[in-house]
Length: 104
Figure 1 (cartoon, helix red, strand yellow):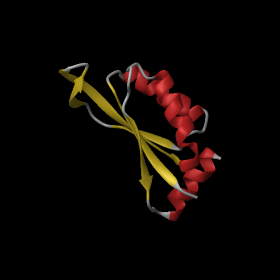
Figure 2 (cartoon, rainbow, N blue to C red):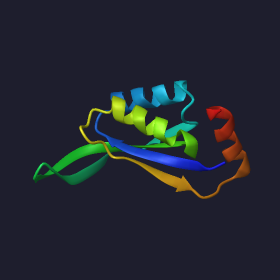
Figure 3 (cartoon, rainbow, N blue to C red):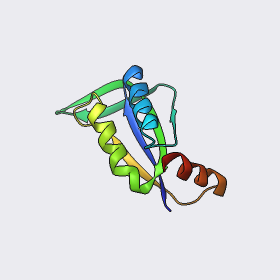
Figure 4 (cartoon, helix red, strand yellow):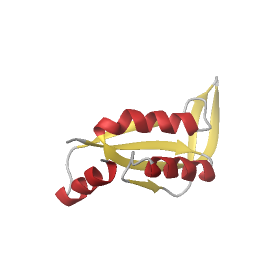
């Protein structure tokens, strides 16, 4: 079994929590974590933008990554949200087993 951490950035806490609830309810992720506020600066449509955002981290099985990404993009307010997948190369066996049990 392989596992991933999926992260996305968002500027609306209510929508972030709503996305998290959907993913947990549907057992697409085992857990989520939300960071403190960050400041993001980036190019968008020929100008540099700045916005306050939060990162959301999600843990799941690799085979569910596409479904998680689709759900995040569907409910995210941005035209082109940052949603990326990072491989989990190992971990505590009990923790990985817990991800399996929650997302199966």
